[in-house]
Image (cartoon, rainbow, N blue to C red; front, side, top):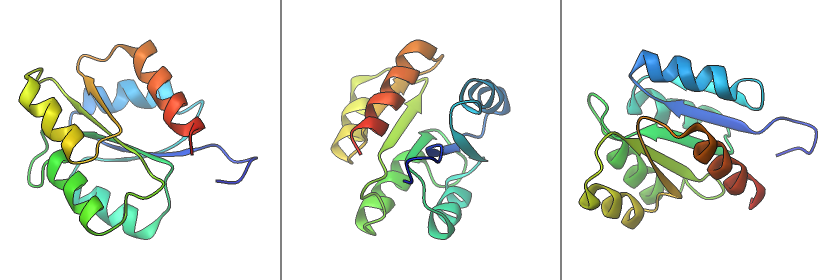
Length: 126
């Protein structure tokens, strides 16, 4: 990431309400790219470089967990942490996300301050 450029974040979220909420919060601070499916997210990751991915787990088609697993298997997650999000609060989902290499797990509805702090921490360690 060039020092003068804004960090690039890919948001993979199929809920338009959450997409709009995060766009409003993040667009002033970061270069944000939006998509609504894991397949579209993979295509964007193949074509562009991102500093961070925020991905919902419960997507139609490929899930966020499957996307994370594929990114790791294909070596595309190096230097690009992935934060998974879900309204599911069961420990098994969280453990599976972390086992697959998620850099963070955020429960919906979002605690915006905690999400912003997590993003800042992950981007500062790159």
